[in-house]
Image (cartoon, rainbow, N blue to C red):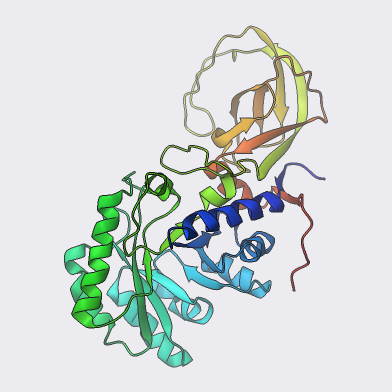
Length: 359
């Protein structure tokens, strides 16, 4: 296998997805599998569907198109507010979209009329994290205008937590979102089918015996793929944390001084690097750099230290590992490293488990 590559264990992903669906299902909450980290990789998306998660979300419409063309049979949700310039593709390829701007929803309606389709929308409400969302006090006016659009179907409301402001989803927030759902239904005599209460950051709320109220949906990605919640990156009991591994090859192995020699200035990334004097060390270079992956998000699986990296190289203190040219080093990625690796054209993909060939 050519290096660098990412090893993907579909069996472990399937286990995590199935277990998570069961955990949330016990309190009446459906899981939307968020597959954006995988660049629309159809084998992974199909694994989620086979595990019982039939509602998939992605922030890039290109990923959704890729999955649909590969034959993945799911309901697809665009989880980033649609671009006004891209409503034609959104209506054509997406079943549901998360929205915050009426001007965009109005454009979606106009395009849906042209395509003779109904487009479903979920309104995102600003609940304190200060990323996307309509302020609660503006919700009534937006709903009133949306309900006048003939080819738009308002199916729910949702909220986001911990992605920008680091705000925790707690019982107070879930109660508020439930109250808003009740208010909309009572004021407009409609029924909302999806109340989406958050993401992988909601696990602690669930474990603390959170009461769902009206919340019946969560949008989960990192917890499925890495087996952790996202407030503190704690492991979730019963889940695998090693479904993905990144493997890089040693391209140089020499004993060298640990400190650079000469007058120091900015490096290639505009940083002033800091080095610890370790004396003469077994200094190894891997064929893996910042152009390939977010190297700060990698944890080596053997006893070596990552000293840093450039666009094309990662430098290690090999310590007592005995690494030589041609050997490989395996790393566990965090979410940022996984995202960069899966979206990099230079990281090859190796599927550890056999799956049926997609149509």
